[in-house]
Image (cartoon, rainbow, N blue to C red; front, side, top):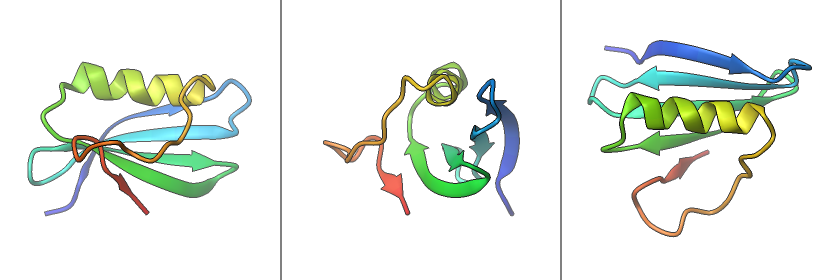
Length: 78
């Protein structure tokens, strides 16, 4: 079973995009894009849909910066 796309967010200039997905295992994943190219994904285990969508929106608004996770709660996937 594949991931289900829940929502998509775009920056005003359409340079940044974030795709919120619900995985078959019940976790949420956000795929982040810049200039139409895949950049990275973040898993959000044990987070609500509202939390994950806020993260996606924050990214496209330019407020979310990619960082190395400090714990295993929000691991990045390359």
